[in-house]
Length: 115
Length: 112
Image (cartoon, rainbow over all chains, first blue to last red; front, side):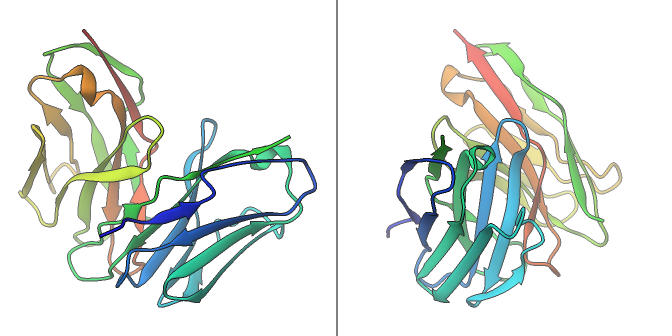
């Protein structure tokens, strides 16, 4: 079974441009998470969805960031307009909500560089 | 609120040395506890977990015991290898919020 799929793996763009990151969770999983990782701030949870509904977006840094999950097999994270400080590795993770704790399965990440 | 505190890194060891990475947590109730590992250039992956007090999680020679009395979940390995070089994250799941709370991560570097 394929794991969490993210695209693109690398993205280089110029300041002011729109960036869209994509994620396909593991089939059957009902929770999806977007994280950002940088050297300075470590791993940050940006937003997560349960059953395609956004539950907590308190980690989204500002209005330039938006995330959608139109169906159970696809999610996007958009940055518009992008800024150099958005440069980071963005991870998508999915899990199956159940008792005893959720193992989250992480994708390989998208390395974003904003020039 | 819920939180996880890990020892700061980097931790630098020689091959075959004993490893301990400390992790303590603050949470209400009885959270499940996890260790995740991130190898260079990859996403995080589950290393081991424990779901109740006194449980011991183990995998790939790593172990961690859920200690409720000290609110700790320290990661140990008796003999590290160069291939264990990675960043290790302690995390807790508190059920009600359906999300993991991660520690800051501890970088481990193992030299031959």
